[in-house]
Image (tube, rainbow over all chains, first blue to last red; front, top):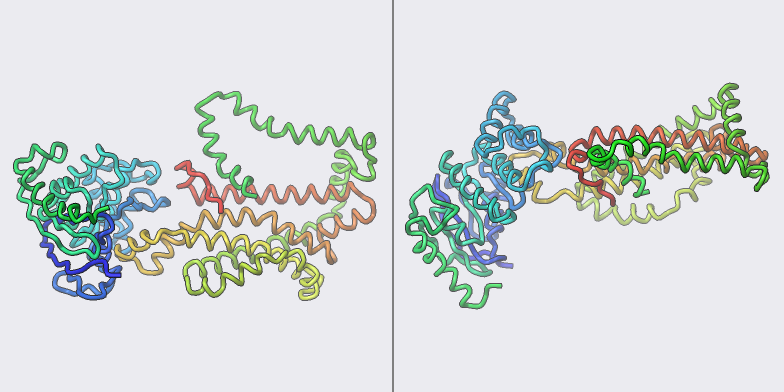
Length: 240
Length: 281
């Protein structure tokens, strides 16, 4: 089955790109291709000009669920990518404490994931990805399962974090407000077989106010620019 | 079987909750637990000779007396030694085989597709019915009992481990691969810990089954062992001897269960902390 068709966009270093589209349009498939877990039948994914043909360990992936290992403490979870990559023990523990401090989880190293709240688990999941400094962080609706308040806080913290470390992020979501608030570019996809509808540049000043979207000067215009593209899908009656 | 499993591993959680509440209940609970057993023993003692003839059911005091004799005279030790060896060796072989093959089939969908129907079919065979055949194949010595115990343990452990390995979330594996994990690291960091609760459950469920295997084997044909001892006692109208043998087996299972529980709590500390219930298949 053809899921993705004629989609082409670039992500530059240090950029935050949001991908939105109706549910089932293949956003997750797109990310899987970016990690090299799926190889496209036609076309290619390029990373630093190199075609991705096998699992790309230079990228980081933050899944929908936190997916921390329940049998490892938070510290061990965050440390894991470094352990897998053969980083020396002294450097590992230093980087773990930095990473945990960065996501506001200092002092929870010895807690098991089941002892942490949903938001804290999510922070742990993000720390685990950030710790090995991947070239690109791919996020698949990471805040979809969180409650509204936690979600706003997480959005705000993600903005701060990505500005601080200068991360390159591809952020999949189905929430237009979230996409507009977080991203430098919003890529809008259509229904399956999914095509690229638009690549909207968002020129809002940073840092942006995540708690009161309309307080950001120019938010309305940016939201409308994305919404106009998105609405065409509703008009066609294809959105479920 | 599963109720037994549930009870032992959820005890931690319950006691935590109870600690917050009333203290006296904590002290009363062990007593409350012993009460039905004590009542049963008293009733047995009283009814024997009054309601039922003693030659049929013996009585607790006679059983205790018999146990004392068996141990003080040393008569029971060769039987204990033989049965103990058969149990331990059979159990270890069964668990090892179950873990290895359950793990292999769980990891490889191709192997699983080929072998699962066969294992399923053999699982359905009543292993007890194989006892006479096993005696023919392995002789009346220890080997046949070891084989019987091993095969009963094997299937229980096999299915638990197989299910455990297969239950690992595909996304977790993908995540590990992107983080840079090799196959060996996947095994060590994901599959083994994920399968551990299932291995423990299988091991615990398998304890009584290994006893059944060994005792049935000894009943069928043997030269030494607790099964033989019980068999001989019952065929010489010695109910006290039968019950003495059963008490010894009971003690064995209880001790083994205790150690399995200890091991489980140690290995699965992360689960008792979370208060999550055990996974029953």
